[in-house]
Amino acid sequence: MRHRLAPVVLLQTQSENAGAQEVSRLVGERLAARGYPVHHVFLYRKSSDCAWLGDVRFCAPARPRGPLGVARLLVRLYETLRAIRPATVVTFQHYGNVLGAVPARLAGARVIANQTTSLRQVARPLARADRLLGALGIYDRVVVNSAQTLSEYGVHPASYRDRLVLVEHGFDLKARTLDAQAARAALDLPAGPLLGCVARLHPSKNLEAAIGLLARRQHWRLALAGTGPHEAVLRAHADRLGVADRVTFVGELPPARIGDFLSALDVFVFPTRIETFGLAGVEAAQAGVPVVANDIPILREVLAVDGAPCAAFVDVDDAAALESAVAEALERTPAVAARVARAAGLAERYCASAMADAYAALVEAVAAERAPPRGAGRVEATDDALAAERGNSR
Picture 1 (tube, rainbow, N blue to C red):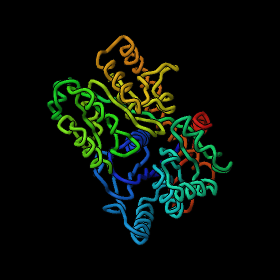
Picture 2: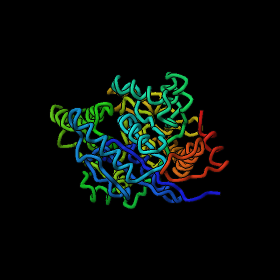
Picture 3: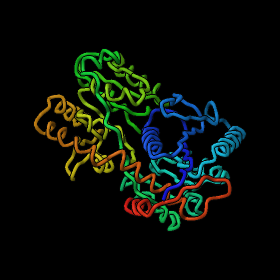
């Protein structure tokens, strides 16, 4: 029998509307619906206050600079967690994992870490710290979001590997409240063939390839939804190619407006080079937008239903091949229509409720492994919860 549910903290590095934040939002909403008091804590504030998440707290107003700034942030994080008194802290992203785990432990909480970043993108000292925290058991569990990510982190020591649990991302269906014309008007997007992408503006997303398409087709236009450190570089690239007037930087959109952005698009171009899942591409495909994606293993894994592709895969370094794939998507050939129809099945494959069930099972399972630390809230796990966790593990 379940007693009073203890608070859960979802800990992120920075506040922005990116993939990890969307997963955190979905998990938080569904844990709250199950009766858990949910608190969202960010190490620092970036492009958004993420007010739609509910209870949101920031440990610093901006990214800390230097060792003293990081030390102050860690002290503030510990004080924040002590005030909330969570039984479990779920950490996201590599900085959230490494910086959040020890303060969470000191505050009396269990730790469920999430690996949503490829090891190829993690600085070596940070990767070593993460491996040590997992091997020493500072992390109670380490969630990975795809089979490829499971394999990538499976090179770690056995004491780390034993904590790995596969929980594929779930997602909410993106409501399309406006038709294409109305959506373009609402978002101030141009008429004509419109390509687009939802992504953090980061070098790994390789959005230069999408901008380069406009130099090959004078009537195509591109809309990019997102913010990030690479924006100035992308704008300069568009200027060099003479296509800046056909690229719209939409900025960051709240989750409720992503559906309308997708409604405005004719093709979703996803040239990313490194992913651990690729949630934006999955959302676009399920919403009925033809997707042209970089031909990398992780995207072939996730953008498929029953082994059949839901997107056109192409080597985005081959500009002519990328152009041809986008042109075919705009024509809505029978092959494109078949992929779009098949993508409707992604909603069942990546069900948000199933993802939340898996996280709830993890929260209850780690609480059952030993008596709660003094002062922490109480959670009683059920046999069903433990079984559910085993079903999502390796």
